[in-house]
Length: 343
Image (cartoon, rainbow, N blue to C red):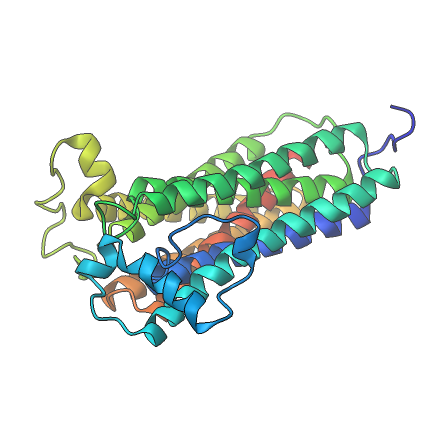
């Protein structure tokens, strides 16, 4: 134990963790683009090592294309696709998987170096081990998601997409939180305050909204009910219940879009109210106050972008921007929750 640093504070470790978080952010954005371009099922096999190398010959490309032609998405959606068009969707998925491998290397190699140099406390070592396990689990869940679209479906199962994104965001949030811990050290006991609980509540709402957004994306619910604030001229969509409550919550286009809208309104009201309250507070420290206000502004911008994406029937650029901003909002919410532990 004594051979390691007693303090959790290390700026180089913090920069490393923030860098990995930035790569995970890139994974989230690239994963969204992969889904939006219909590319997620273009690679039908999971080869963690050999899959790093893309097809290098015409014969290799034809074999990959033949594998894709066997799945329902090709037969029912992309029948007649040319090899060149297939290469277009293949590169999106290959890049997404390659970036996942890069994240693993960028995490593992510096971790081993910091461990060798004794720059990590025992507490930080265990946190990093948990982060590494989460990263490995994310790869397994990603393949589990893809496998759901290889037989009997033309796309991945929406609930598996939500789990895949949800786990990625947990890893992303944990990297950011642990990075701040490494930057400043663990929190010291402070006076009891309502602000930490409020910040954690906002963080939970932001995370829930991201999961609901994944269900909207997985069900392609952004392509229907493109009026706002009503849905097909109704405040509550007639098609909300389809095949039972649980099935509706996961698979009804009306239900997942309605739920996403309602949580957006709740998050918008909560973040705005807390931003105003924080701005008026005399006991709240300056950085935390600024983060409450910043989060309120960013949630408002995200809501406006969401409405714009909806009424324009989810074009690629707006949809990608909406997902990227959601990840940025989550990062701010994590930072706020971390910071309020120190007011």
